[in-house]
Amino acid sequence: MYLDDKEFGSVLLQRRARSRYIRLRVTPKGEVVVTVPWLTPWKAGIAFLESKREWVRRTLERQSRRQDAYAATDPQEPVTDAYIARLRAEAKRTLPPRLAELAARHGFVYNKVFIKHNRSNWGSCSTRGNINLNLNIVRLPDRLRDYILLHELVHLREMNHGPRFHALLEEVCPDHRALQREMKGWRLV
Image (cartoon, rainbow, N blue to C red):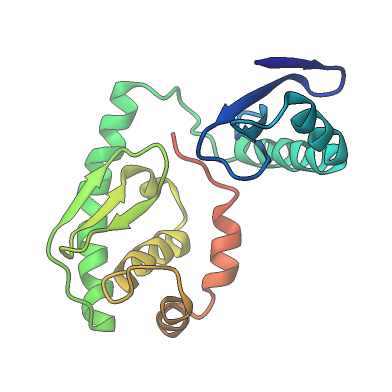
């Protein structure tokens, strides 16, 4: 069900059987979503939205600023199949050798490396020791490329983002926190 809000436009109100609490979120596209447990009246969801109005305002403003920052990282040419093919070719040529170099330097051993065109992540590591890298990594400055590669290599030893993961990442990449903040200014195409 949609609620027409004067300030936020269409607000999606939805019921979820598995929800135990009223939830409020703002999607990356700027849509406001209120989720209520199955037997909770819509009025409770609307009241919750009203109580969190300032949070929604701040979140939408933050997303707007982030979108402005993203504009600077957008490719200068249209994102076509040919553009993606060029990124993929460059990624296959440059990323595996750099990954091997960083792995050897820091004592990591991985199984295989795959270049993918994911829409949601820069890389991942499987329990089998395979590393998946997003072809968009080649658009990044070298320091951010290395940060992503080291991040995935650390996952070979720690498959989560717990304290041990961060301690090991700190060893191999001391400025990882600043690099992680800098990554927020980049987006996938």
